[in-house]
Image (cartoon, rainbow, N blue to C red; front, side):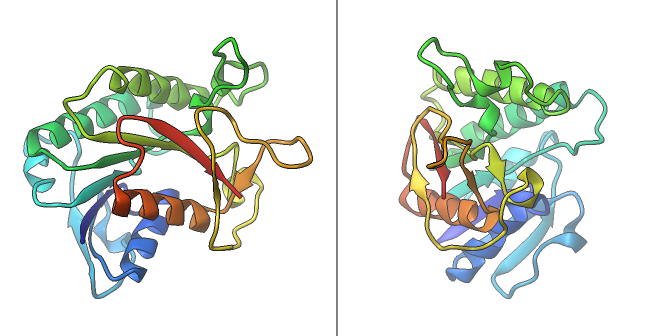
Length: 219
């Protein structure tokens, strides 16, 4: 199968490229710095700006597209820049008639109680992550009203790999949740390694699962 990965040199994007390539798929890795793209015979690095007018043309011909887009934590006005980039990606996918667009969101979008409170709205949520979590949730809410794009939206758990003080071990398995934040057996927020998250993403992209819905995974 032919897959595209947007944000291919980021923490999640790099792992997704590696996982898809290891399964023998043809992978096109879109990135701002192509020299940092994972090297493999079946990986093609392509420089791309998601906000460019011609980006939709670059998304044509793929079986599925994975967006692990992030403008970078040092980006000024990161929330609006994230929102603009993701909106451009969704619009490009619509124009290119992408069969399946899988967007990688964040744990902040997940529900934590029956009242509909999301994790990013809770007391103590990290201030530095709040802008992108807010923008990601607004994107998700808008997508829930949009059937013109074949979207799906995966949210990592609260603890993601080394960046979330969790393990980087590739266990080769995961459990699926729904819209709610997943918890571990000890009652603490659940986690997953970025390698196992990439497995879940690759599985979903191959099967085109969870169409027009969002979900989460954890160890």
